[in-house]
Length: 332
Ligand code: TYM
Image 1 (cartoon, rainbow, N blue to C red):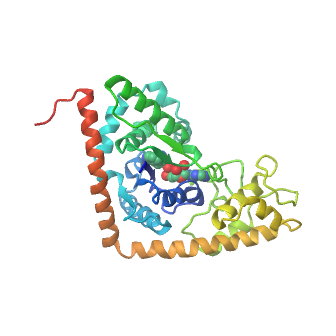
Image 2: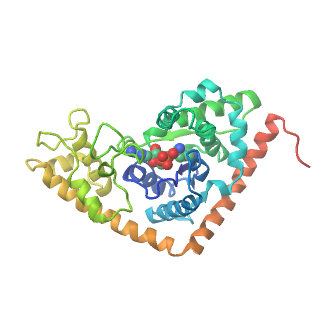
Image 3: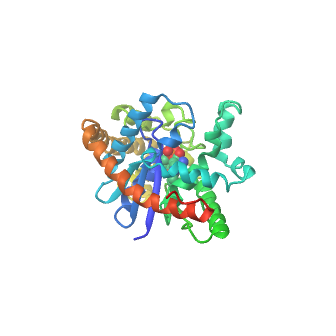
């Protein structure tokens, strides 16, 4: 079985619809066909200032949401990044292979550091993509299921894997991004020119999966469309409507031409009312299941402990090979 690996940050608490449709939904599908490793990336979460208790709670909350979304600990390896020390260890090696200019070109860093101001952005935020490289290479992943915003980090992973292999001999699998075209970028409901995100979206443009379903329905009903009334998929002329159609189609399995036909001659109101209902039907059981996992922290922690053990077995083997290749003296 080919291997996949991916990660999600626990920082924000609730996952948003972009996280789910762009990534987590694919994770659930891929556990059936791939040897799948998924993690909550708490090391990445401290690249911006964090509250310790909140981070701990949000790490459990992220794991609970992943299980609620359909990850099955019998079909995949689910773990917390800091439980596997090899991530930080390989990241150091990779940092030493990364050019300063190369790291400076990472657009996510540029965006985030611009927001914080150069003096307040940490060195950890700067090398964040290199930690992500280590995350992926440790597991010899063939594919990495993510949204479009992570593509550049996967490119960096490929470059560094090839560089390491070229310099020290074949060690790492060179991974490919696994990005579904339809859901690669879910847009803000109030501003379809920007992606839905915790940091850039206004509350009305952002669908948090754990929000009150009623509030979610309201946000869908007040989504920005355009002054026309025709329901047609056209990302250039009708980005708002197209985003709603993408969401609707992915959550229900109806394809887009089918939806265009269903709403021919009807206004945006009908589409939004129906999509609001679809969304409520999706988030209501999702919230319930998440709460059930949170109510039983022992079970949750034991799932994560088992996951960490499985992950560590793979990560330790890769790390020891990499250490040997770069010339470190074995410890015994
Ligand atoms: P994060 O936590 O920001 O996001 C988790 C996943 O959600 C996707 N995503 C979206 N997809 C479509 N439309 C959107 N509006 C949208 N917003 C977010 C992201 O692309 C991502 O797949 N650096 C990563 C976490 C990470 C990782 C890794 C991923 C750390 N190590 C190793 C893969 C492999 C991040 O911050 O994702």
